[in-house]
Length: 145
Image (cartoon, rainbow, N blue to C red; front, side, top):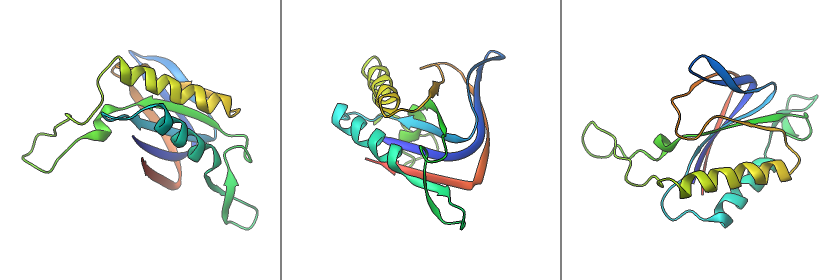
């Protein structure tokens, strides 16, 4: 599993001109699942993200978690995070998990975050989405499990 975590001031995802998910301050999560990922990995990722301290405190140090700042989450499924670019010029996506299991695990991931007390907005699995955001920092982390 690979998750790109972007600390944002706001973010949204649109499909065919309609906003389907929108948050203020929080995390934009781009989520890629690979073959072999199972529920324990998804739970571990959600737990790690829930506790990640990448917001600045009053002294400017990254000591605050998403809960500490009352942040929100926008979760977007993105299989292209599993692209293999080692050979040739055309990325290979053979390592990416296929639906329907990938959709189920992404939904499980989102439920885990909600169970941790977060407001979670989402994109639409498999849709052509336009994601817009204001990255705060910029602060971006790649979590590989």
